[in-house]
Length: 118
Image (cartoon, rainbow, N blue to C red; front, side, top):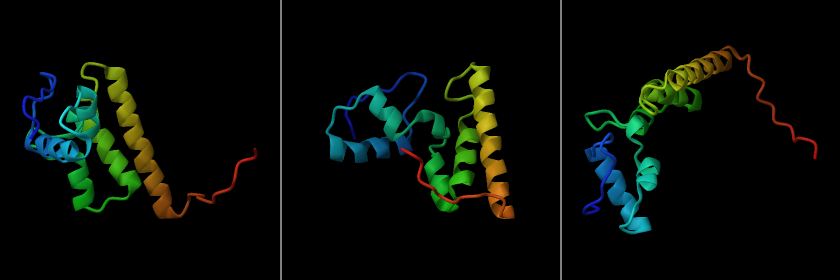
């Protein structure tokens, strides 16, 4: 564990965050900034019990659209508390990913890749 590593008061340490920070310490060294914490274990993706978004995604083997929809559902109102415009934006992103997944399931997505002109 990173001894004395502080997190912002609004982001209490959780067991999941401690484990992620321990793993990161092994590769990057003991000095992590609050920015590093946001990359390794963003508090807006961790439940009060310590369950993290990525744990649910992996446990249920979710594809990209479903995982992204879950991400936006879980973080809506938490990433920027009090910023209702950002909360609405996250919920709109959730809907976009769900609609895309519905199109994929109906076979309505054109996922043909073409190279763009240079």
